[in-house]
Image (cartoon, rainbow, N blue to C red; front, top):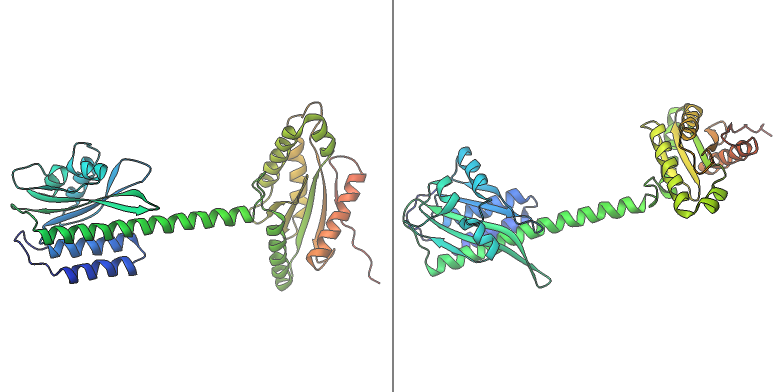
Length: 346
């Protein structure tokens, strides 16, 4: 780290290093570290730090520092919550602040041993709205003031740092939205289970795997008995409650390797790799029967189960076989489970 003597910075070199960090570094820690190091070297600072501020909260948190030992970093954190501290004032008001020797450099000065310090806000603008990002501070161990050129350089570097912070936040926001859209595209909004599109994709993958390995896959279709009548008599809201309750039971009753989806209306489907399809179906039926009464009615389900490859070798064949088994179960009374009966060849 350079000493406290006044340096003669090459602004172009410093700005080039900072701009390259913003352009090339996707990691915020690396980008801000390069920016802080470049400006600290250029201005001969003995210490420096960048504090980050969440746009939704007022609190500042030290993000990284140069020229401080681990104990100094801890002291930075302990002083960041003092609203009268220079670092907090700069971040709150969005204005620059300089402290010469003999004045109070705040918690940063005490943590770094700096007697002079230059505090700059990190503010990005998006859509005409200023978004606080935190603050940048440099410190010197002697009496130090910035020339007009140095002040302009430090302000520009602060803008680049704010841009790096804002870009990182935008990237996180885009990733969160992409994850949300992906989740919505593959899930049922009422129950949170996978939707039919996801079920179809998973079934194709499991059938391909089972075909390669010579193993089995079961498909179970679960239908809530008398749901239409219950929905009509108890109301739509009660019907939705039943759907969510049964969805939760089905999801909790299957194995980690199984996939549960809502197939629309009052039906759910389960893809169960291996030979445990009937075991999973029985577990689901028993758990649903333990649900509280809805009015005077006991909630129950009928389930049809089909197996690959004996009941079908394609997704369509297997689902058709499971649906035929479900019709058999429905005809046998509430709470019944039926397996598909393989059709004789020829």
